[in-house]
Image (cartoon, rainbow, N blue to C red; front, side):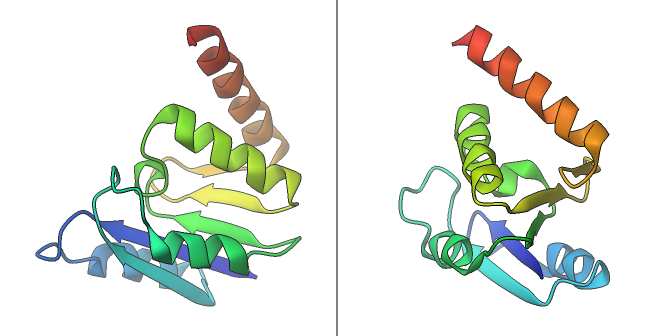
Length: 116
């Protein structure tokens, strides 16, 4: 199942562009969050992550909609991988269902680990 997650930072911002893109790629369920990325409590993200099952794909407009930092994003994607959930970012064309992108993501993780 394709599950979408969208986030805008303020109540004034509109998620319509993200929603349209997620619907276009066939997301069957979309979670919408209106809170800053640095906000600790992202209830829609928590619900989204609980919904994901083995074989699902989590799709976002951009990776920064999901993670607050590169470290946060890497941790989250590692967790998804362990759970058998793929990840796809529409604007960066990152898709962990492909061997090439899985290899690229591993390289990003290695570089982030070295940076730490």
